[in-house]
Amino acid sequence: MKTSLFKSLYFQVLTAIAIGILLGHFYPEIGEQMKPLGDGFVKLIKMIIAPVIFCTVVTGIAGMESMKAVGRTGAVALLYFEIVSTIALIIGLIIVNVVQPGAGMNVDPATLDAKAVAVYADQAKDQGIVAFIMDVIPASVIGAFASGNILQVLLFAVLFGFALHRLAAKAN
Image (tube, rainbow, N blue to C red; front, side, top):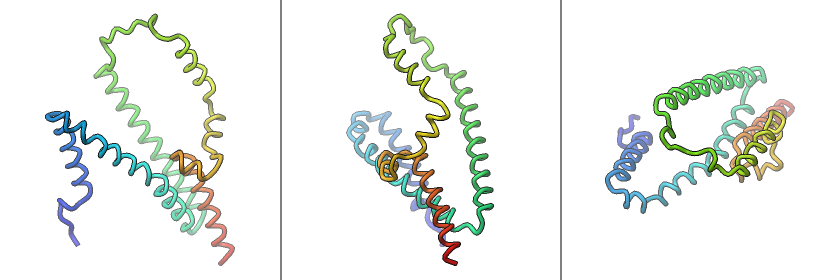
């Protein structure tokens, strides 16, 4: 069954983006009045991201025939993530060097708040691989979903999927 171009979701989203850009450029006051619609849409998207990721990962892992397939899929996903992240980094570096954001702003370093810079530097020192790993482990499952921490939700989904897979193997 072929759907009409106008009924396809991607066409509707791209059309809405184009209308939003044109509205914001030519009629900024109307665009400002419509800001709650955009904010609500973003909140709705954020609301469903964690449950969708959880359900997808759990059903994917629990439905696999062997754990070797899960490992292979995980390795491919990790490789894909690394490649896409590297491409994004390269694109970002190229854009920063071409556009040079902040050039000509003439910010005097003496006017910066030294205390704020020191606090930021101290927070950066506290970040490391151990702190990152400890941050991935959720204090509670509900907290991971409520805060929208996708890495915590992903870790729980992987563990839950493995547990379901093991239970299914024992039941058979």
